[in-house]
Structure formats: C-alpha cells, structure tokens
Length: 129
Image (tube, rainbow, N blue to C red; front, side, top):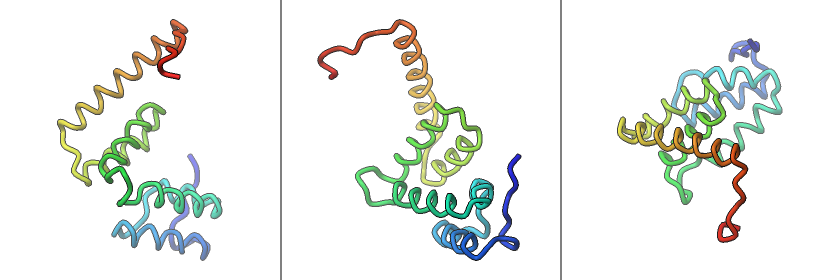
C-alpha cells in the first residue's frame, strides 16, 4: 500500500491543493486518493487541475452524466477504489437505483459484446469508418 500524506505533515504546495479540494467539495478532509497522490506534489496538482476542468458543471454534459460515465469507465478498468468513489459521487448528484441498475446492464453488455467482437476479430463495417 502506498503511503498516505496527511494534511498535518503535508508540504505547503500539497496543503494548497488539499485546501482547494476541500473548499470545492465542501468537505473537512480529502479522500485517500488525493493523500496517495500527494507523495508527488506535481502529480497531485496536475491531476486536481485536470479533474476539476473535466468534471466542472456547465459543459455539454451535466454533472450526473459525467459521474456516471466516470463510474462506467472505472467499472471497465476494474478500479475498486474508483468504483466506490464515483458511485458515491453519482448518488450524491442524484443517481437513482434504477439508473444504477441500467448503468450496470449497459456496462455489462458492452463488456460482453466487446469481448465477442475482439474474439471473433470482427472487421469494422465501412459505414462506421
């Protein structure tokens, strides 16, 4: 397991990012993902800056859709931590049990058909090019 950097022991540049995350999310402490990234302050900063831009409200996709997409990608990647984190975030943004069920069905179906297409080495139809 990677070392987690707690706020009290963090370097000033790490504390600055932690403070931004806490303010943006209205939380008392950052979660373990950020604490693990904090062992490399440059990676912590770059990841936070990118994430807040990508996940910002006001784009073409609403915040719930973004969280559900993030959750689907995390499921496909098999990231247990990310699945837990983004399930909670999607629920906080209003994801219902019915939506979660459909998301699971879509992700499961995509995984199955993706593997079938790859195993069968199906050529891409010209109409899809």
